[in-house]
Every structure is written in structure tokens, then in C-alpha cells.
Image (spheres, rainbow, N blue to C red):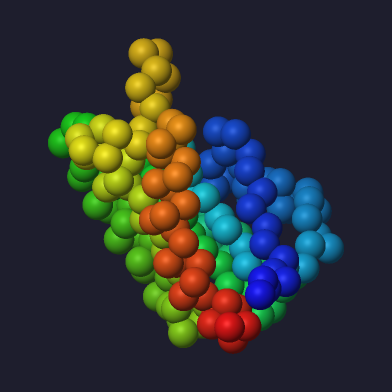
Length: 169
């Protein structure tokens, strides 16, 4: 039997945490009540310099506080996917993961319904999964047809571990 779950995964192409906060401050989604929020922390934020990355973490935290103000008991999945095809990107991705983990910890971790879905390794340009698109002029980080299935397989356990789904089995 299925589970009735209100999942919200708003997407703004190319949006960073700063753009997300601007949308929320404008009152978008004010009346949205959900069981599970899925927030793509976006590779656009990974490109931030060290000072900007600190500010980005504060923005994620603002977004989480806002999500909890509209849906106090919701689970929140912080989703991350980005390439690691250079030493610079590998270093930035490591710092990005640390900031995600700190954000998760600041809100009580999985015990308080904050989860991380880290797909970066599977979608890395250096992985053998062949999940990432290979368009010549593109970012090579978006899922291709095979990658869509891979994405679902990787993220499914994160959804299954949420408090909401554990309580509705």
C-alpha cells in the first residue's frame, strides 16, 4: 500500500541559496504545508569562495528555519550533486560537504528530520557510473537518461530513512 505524503521539491533553474532566500522573503510558498521538503543545495553554491560559502551556510539555515515555520514537523532533505573533475572542485566539494554536515548538525541531525542526500560521487565526471550528461558545451553535471534512474536508486534510501516514512510503514 502506498503512503500519502506531501513532498515539495521546488526548483529554480540556476538558483543559489541567496536566490532561494529572496523568493521566500517575497512570500512564495508561504502557505505550503508539507511532510518532506527536498532542497537541492545546488552546485551554484559550491562555486562560492570561502567567505561566500560561510554566508551560503547561513542562507541554508534561514531556508530551513523558514521551512520549519511553515511545516514544523517536516523532514528536510538537503540534496547535493556536483562534479569533481579538478583538484580545485574536489577541495570545494569537501568544504561544501562539511558545511552541509554542520548545517545538518545545527538543526539536530537525522533525529530532528534533517537528512543529506549526497550524489556528488556518483555524478562526478571521474566516476564510472556514466550518469552525468556528456553534452559538449554543457555542465556535464545533470543526469542523463541512465542517470535519472541512478539518481532515484541513490536517493531512495534517504527518503526511506525519513521520520515521515518510518512512521507510515
